[in-house]
Amino acid sequence: MKLWRSPLAWTFLASVALLLGVGGWLLTDPATSRSDALKTGGLAGGAIVALYALWLNDRRRRVEERRQDIERQRHELESQRAEQDRARVADERFAKAVELLGHAADQVRVGALHALAGLARSRPDYTQTVLDVLCSYLRRPFEHPRYELDRKERGGARGTPEQEQELQVRLTAQRLVKDLLPPADAPDAADYDLDLTGAVVEYLDFSGRRIGGMLLRYATLHSSTNLSGCRFTGKAYFTAAGSDSGRLIGYFRCRGAVFESHAWFSGTHFAELTDFTDSTFAGETTFKDARFGDDAIFAGVKVTGSLDLRRACFLGQTDLRFGVLPESVSLYNTLVRGEKDLRLPEVWGTEELRDGELRIVAKAG
Image 1 (cartoon, rainbow, N blue to C red):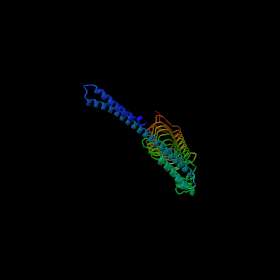
Image 2: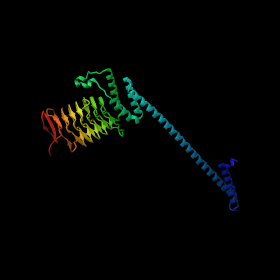
Image 3: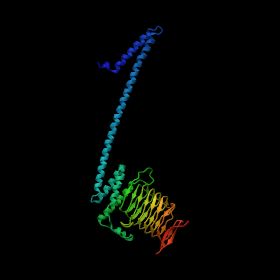
C-alpha cells in the first residue's frame, strides 16, 4: 500500500496514462501515423517524468541547504563555546596574575606583569584593562633614598634590597606599558588611556607611542622622562606634577610630540632641562604657574589652540621662539632671569623688575 502512495508511483501512472491517452487520441486522426502518435505520447509521458525529476532535484537541494544550515549553526555554536572557554581561561589568567602582583617575591611580581602583558597581546580586548592594572601598580607608594638627593649625589645611592627589587619591578611595568601602546604613526590604531595620577616613576619612556588620554597629575618623575614623538589623541594633564609630592627631577624631553586636545602643565615643576622643540599643541594649552628650574626650549613649537603662560617662571636659559602662536596669549607675571640667555618671538618684549627678574610682555601694536 505504501508503494502506491509514493510520488514515484503516481508519476509512473501519470506518465503511462498520458502515453496511452495522447497516443490513443492521435491514432483516431487518420492524418497521424502510428509512429508519430506513439512518439508524441512518449514525449507527454516523458514530460511528466522530467517534471518529477526537477521536483526531486529541488527537494534534494532544499534538504542539502537545510543540512548546511544545521551544520553552520552547529559550527557557530561550537565557536561560541570555544570563545566562552577562551574567555573563561583568560579571566582566570587575569585574576591569577593580579593576585600574584601582591606576592612578596619580586620575581613572582615580574612574572605576573609579563603574564598580564601576554594576555593583552593575545586578547586585544584586555589591553585597556591590563594597562589600567599596570598603571595602578605604578601608583602604589614608593620611596628610594636617591630620590631625596641632588643629581650629583644620586649616582651611587642605593636603597634596601626590598627597595631595589621593587624598583626593578616598577621599571618592568613601565616598559610593558610602552610595549602595549601602538606606534604614534600606526593607522587606525586604538587609543588607550593612561592614569598615572600621583605615581612615582623613574626613567619614564613612552617615546614614539600613541596615547589616548594621559593623567600625570601630582606625579613625581625622577631621573628623566621621554615623551618625544608621542601623539596624544585625548586630554593630557600634567597638573602640579612634581610640585607638592616632590621634584620633577631630570630631563623632560617632549620633542616633536603632538597634543591633539588639552595639554595642561599648570603648576608643574620642571627641575632640569625641559625640551618641547617642534611639538604641536592643537587644543587648549596652559603652563600657568609652571616652574622651570633649568633651561627651557620651546623652539619651533606650534600652538594653534590657546596658550596660557600666566605666572610661569623660567629660571634658566630660555628659548621661547615658538613656530606658531595663537592670536592671543595669556601673559601675566610671566618671569625670566635677566642674567640668563633669553630668546623671544618678535612680538614679545620684557620689563625689568627687581632682583634681576624680567617680566615678559606683548609689544604694543
